[in-house]
Image 1 (tube, rainbow, N blue to C red):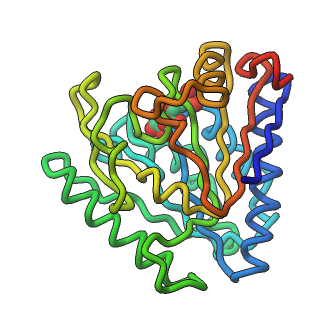
Image 2 (cartoon, helix red, strand yellow):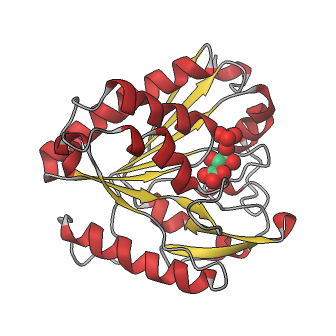
Length: 254
Ligand code: 6PG
């Protein structure tokens, strides 16, 4: 498996390095297939990356060839302060100039139904499958490949909304599911591990000292994915990057 770790002195430099990598990887995808799909993460470091795109990168690629998928979402309306879609809109999309169509990606928000998260997840699975198959070179694939998946890592080693000891960790068939998270007494909606692992490129963005134990156990084991869900992320054919700041990186990585 192709695996690269990039360590930067602080969160701002992680966001800058990840933005440069993202632009380069989008260019590669567009050159190869004419399109690029990106699954977005919630969280603080990705938020800075979205701001950097809106501030500096609107002309770096033809964004009209890019489709944004929500990698995970909270089971709340889009105007709610916890909504990942709201965060992406505020940090990035709302700041684009509508008179510049090449700066504007296509976005697929999860159509939330707070009382029926399973139904919302099933609908979103259809939406992403149709969108990816349109641009796919492998229309028969049971699990279509997203070009780029951005991920964060929780202190408890969750990623996307794959939390320790939750049902979604056992999912082997579906691409996107509603996942009940007992510690929040709430549903989250999330890409599944098989869907993430089918991606062409996966990048974790992780900053801050509270993340160091999770980084350590995810990278160096012991392997207990039920307890440390990010251990499930092992791309089948794709490439895996970790962007870390020095506070999150263990000694071996510095
Ligand atoms: C979310 C996420 C989640 C996040 C991690 C890390 O919706 O919250 O997608 O998986 O990436 O919790 O978040 P931070 O980068 O803010 O620590």
